[in-house]
Image (cartoon, rainbow over all chains, first blue to last red; front, side):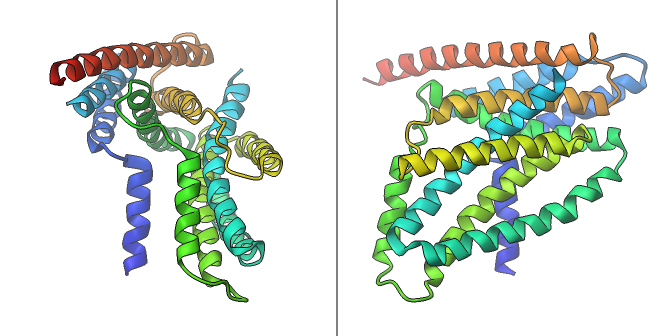
Length: 64
Length: 246
């Protein structure tokens, strides 16, 4: 079972990394984009703006 | 244009991972000999081939929009992590990745383990682990990049080109590739992964990009500009904090 835990930890570290809030922000942004597209708005600006804001917030937290 | 960017992104990302694998392999081979290390490398490459052979065809059966949302989200999360680390390193908040220090640490650990044996399981395991784990990362990049465009071939080509160049460089240098500007590479890879991730996940969510594929270039420019601004702001804030603490 230990190797399974190690394998899971490897993928978590590899994909999610040091700050899980980035992953949450990305999922929220994609969900929001999809919801807005289904309401008829071609919501292309949402994801780039959300992503840069998440990156800035995460980097700023590292400074603190 | 899109195909070239796909090739370049796969090539750069795979180069970074392969430099890391080469550092571990060289450390094992130099201290414990090539024989067991070679078996470890071969076993890892075999295991990777099985995984890629199983995953590759499965991707072709998934509808392209669903695949783009999942792959785009994964690339975006993964790319932002790389970009964040590169920004923190460039602004002095995190130590630069040092292949020479990693190489020396591996050598010390391997030498401390004791004498060599005819079948050196320690060397086998370290070489296997290094190549398999870094190789899994390469496989992830190739499968996601290729899968999202339904063009695994061009991503494989990027990975093969990276392998050839890293192997040639390793053969010439006979040591860790300390002169590879790893942070600059990671910065570039982070930008590419983030831009592709935004592009594909938004397309998968139903967005029609203004200008079609050309929007990818605008996204790259936007992400690069934002990253440079962040480095400048963080560097200044870090300097102010250090001055206040002194």
